[in-house]
Length: 570
Image (cartoon, rainbow, N blue to C red; front, side, top):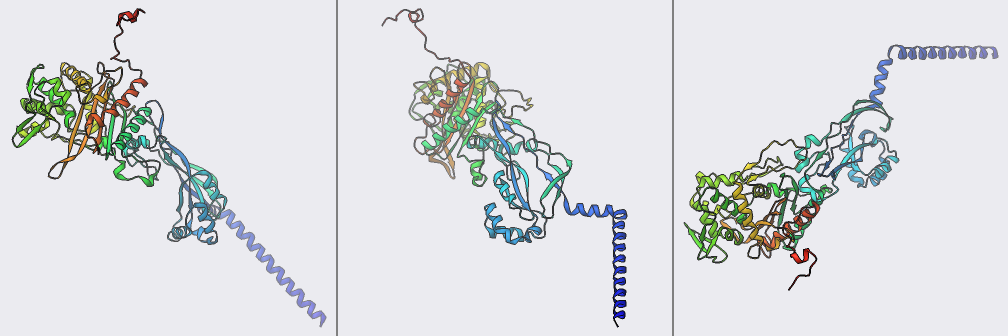
């Protein structure tokens, strides 16, 4: 009996050994098959599960001012993303992950579950590197980091309306960022990476296409003057409880835009606070009826057309004039005046007489050549052309009102550009915002050099003791300019208590270096351009003159005795 049991046990043992040997042989054969005949297939399957192709974001080109001062730069940030399938298997980690992401757990759960059938979902974009690394340190399955870039504007509100901003995908949305998005945007790259079973990147495998950085862009702006102009305009809008305002400062020699600011402003570094009504560049996209700042062009048109003699006198008594059913009014009865007094005291009656004495075609030609009713060529998003009706459609009353700045619409930028004609012997300069732009546009002849010189001399009296812009005076410099106070158009006519207050000036008047237009929308207290807009011009251009070392042209003469060291006699 015992021998029989031993024989059965030995049989079982031999059977087990045979089975083990067969299994071993099968494993060896299988391994050989996989290694020798299916290695490429398995390798591909392994890569498909562990190797991924990632997009490498490109660095957006920087924007600088004329001196190389950074206006817009891109800083690297981290974006947290996840593989929803892997993250669904780690529900117990969602609470600590949500805390690290500074998110509500319910919001995180909804985001993951609603995208369970995808392989990619953003959890938090544009995180500071230190906070993102804290998320990565949790080592939650399926969660990874990728580098992106976030746009940053060092000068904030001061340059916001010119630059615009970018969205979370780094695409331009307004201003220069939108207009030159094709130039500033880089070319994304691609690379293959190896990941572990939790979806974390282990190492880079290969570069498919390197990312190409965007191109830099240099503007004509001077960051110092941009800040000063923004500060002064904002102070004026607040001081007069106005609805808004714009200011444009040009280099009178080149047409370069040195500063262009608006109110109300916005912070381009805080996307969540940006409102469309605050983001538009009013200096370029908002056209308005300018009022009396057009009068120098009315006088210029009359002189160039030989409609009047430079020494003509005009009877403006009794301070009113009837044109059809329209009554044109001056602030008071100026009596008989010359052209200089017309400009200095801003006589509507005098301007109307000149406009009606000038052939419509000649008057229209002057306004058209000044750039009114047409784009400046700046190619700024949403730029307004303004309005200047063809002279063949003018009625007498329309020609009359054009004489003192009603019946046409202009932008603050167009106004500043138009006034460059008075600074450059009658030639309007093309405006420029991009320093590196290949701009072949030629200056436009608006009036004769003699007429431009006469008008500049007349406009100096506007800033004199009898003029409407005494607050534009700058010590040591001769200033030429013109004020404007225009009622706002409303349904059914013009408002009695809502105005555009403006001032456009040149300095130094003897050899202009700067042209500046200032427009304030609906000041609540005083509404005269000389009181509201002229002080902004004075403060900004006075600083510009110092910064650019412009020689004074109105220094008082030194008596001979003082010049030779002798004491002056009383």
